[in-house]
Image (cartoon, rainbow, N blue to C red; front, top):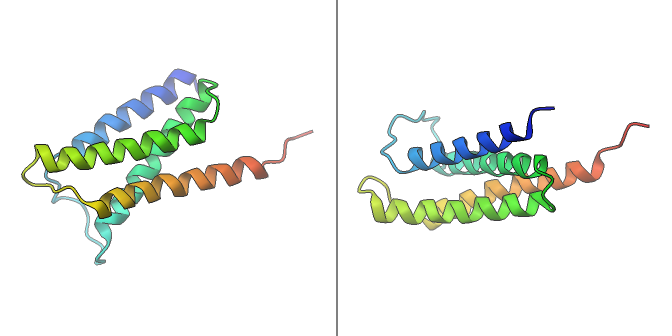
Length: 123
C-alpha cells in the first residue's frame, strides 16, 4: 500500500495542474473528430480529480470519502469555470462544461460506490 501522503500529494498536484491547464489557451489537445471532445476532456479530467481525492481521503481514514470527493470535484469544477470567464480572454465559462465536470465526478463516484458494495472479502 502506498503511503497515505502520496495520495494527498497526487491529488494536490493534479488539482493545481488541472487549474493551470484549464486557465491557459490549449489548442494543442488532440482532436478525434467528434463535436463533444471538449466535454469528454472535462468528463475525464474531473473523473480523475474525483478519484484522486477519494483515494487521498480514504487513505486518511476520512468518513464518507466518496461523498466528500464528489463535493470537492463539483465545487472545484464550478470555481474553475467561473475563473475561466473572469481571468482569461481565450477561455469562456460554460454551463455545458460545468455539467460535463459534474458528470465525470458523478460517474466515478457511482463506480466507486458499486465497487465498494460488491467487493467480497477474503476469508
